[in-house]
Image (cartoon, rainbow, N blue to C red; front, side):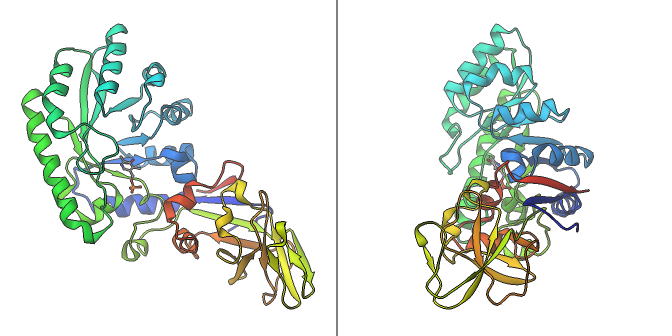
Length: 368
Ligand SMILES: *Cc1c(COP(=O)(O)O)cnc(C)c1O
């Protein structure tokens, strides 16, 4: 790996391929794969990741918002793109860029139907989202009749897929709840089927669902975090490879006398002679203030250097008293080791939050 001279997020596309093949090995040969690339592909780079996934012949992509889908289309991505949480003000743009909406409420259905009718579109692909227990987005099971009647009364829409989302797929203690969601989803499928003379794609599982509920893969699975190297369990994590490594350097080293303080509000006070190193990454880059004051750490030459004092906007300071190192040396925040899981656990956070929060200011570099 190349030596860095500034803060970078290194994205390993070989690791992405490895994760894709690992996830695929958990599926039946015919099960389709939808890759979730929302939030800049979980904080990496949605365009580079989507191009790589397109080469791997993934079946579908998903983003949360229309704007994210537009960015993929403008980069030349041709795969079908499901927009999980479109807002009605963006429906015209969604159509202009051939994006496919999740339709999750009567308001969304009626507004979209009105637009496609006005535009005289035929068979525009939509994805029906049902709520089976997460209570976030989705129609309820008894809505099937009126949803399907509205859709069948027009020739403007085609139900490309029907889906739901598990609330606790990673939590084995909630197995009974998840099995109930699977059962509820099957009932929804059998209630929808009589209304259609074609077969939509049915899908329910996210990454942990793929691993823990192999009997619930249906026609397609939706994987996000797994592609990026995390499986919400130690067992799966050892078989996946984190694609993102956040690295920086030591900008400056300070010798501190006992009694000196470090950083804003003098939050850290040296009780003995110490050495501190200043690292050019701060809360504006996604390392929040909760990592300050000895909660989080960076890794310098395989040693843990705790973050001391308050994390600043553009910098943080670490204790390197017992670590032989010099200005210009590389430091790692998270990557293969320590992983984003162990880094985020220092603040009771989770891999999803730390990786998606690395701001666009941090330069992305790619290992292809
Ligand atoms: C984000 C998201 C996913 C991906 O979940 P992972 O746990 O990252 O695999 C799947 N489905 C929906 C509806 C989502 O919002």
